[in-house]
Image (cartoon, rainbow, N blue to C red; front, side, top):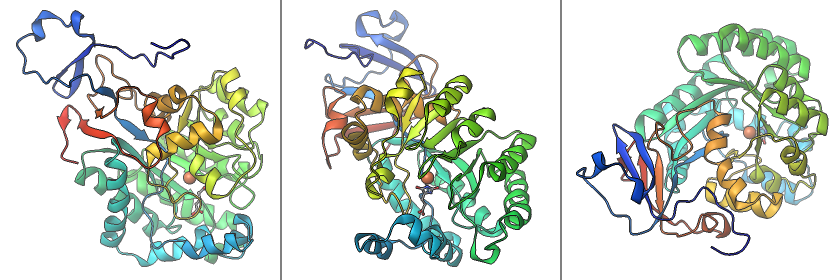
Length: 391
Ligand code: DI6
Ligand code: FE
């Protein structure tokens, strides 16, 4: 090992034993219990093995794309100006409403398969481009279907409080009362919601509006998370923390009071370098404060058509290190154990006895290799619940 080398919890000559999809031993080969000696074995020739990757914040189900908006931004328009002029999220809503369930599924699967090809086995998928009850439910049904069709776990998130659709312009409370809140009850009754999310921002919902959504989630026994402090500081992270949120996401404008509130509630800070990059944001998330207060850090693609058309979690690792100065060890924890925590899943994210055998074998010898390359995929094999996957 080189001087100053970081451990990553790496085991040099390691062995894993898997039974019924669960890790029953993980440690030095020399300590492998004798009971496993006559089990079928596979020699990995010293390859790097890590927990499989978890993308804990995505909007992969949507209609259309926003390449024209990309051009407009290059011509000088800001994201907020485009949103206020009826573009942005609302334009994706039009395309999503017009798409059938099969169309949404087919286009989302292309993005999901790209993520899977890099070793993702757990994927969060949000609604939030339907903005009417039926279209929100359709998005969530597509998300559930993706989990059935592929060897991955999908965690679904209800995000009707993402934007106000044109028909409720100027009547945000009407949208909450007639769509967001009753839609949540219906989606929950259909078993479509794992977590409830909102977008707390000047162009979206205020803290008191988000509180109404969170109160309903609480009444239904559902955990919450929040898009907070992305473009300005509205105190969204502290609000989320007061509800014991699993995570607060984006966080470029988060201040120390917000970080401390998150620390007190053990809310994960999810950083999204793809959106930071796409918007050419100059305000950096307060990584030093997040470290200082020992808040768990996760990172995710935020795959969405507007601010992060990104379908590579490996590139996200690189961006988190290069743009946000995360160490590769922090970045990797951010797409494994801390991403699991951000989804409230305590059965995965580490190579540890008793956890799911979701793991990746890489054509690499050191974990930092997964963060440092740009546009190269070293995945050799992905295991989902102990089963080697074709893709
Ligand atoms: N923040 C984001 O970056 C995405 N949603 C959100 O709340 C953007 C979604 C979009 O522009 O389509
Ligand atoms: Fe997002």
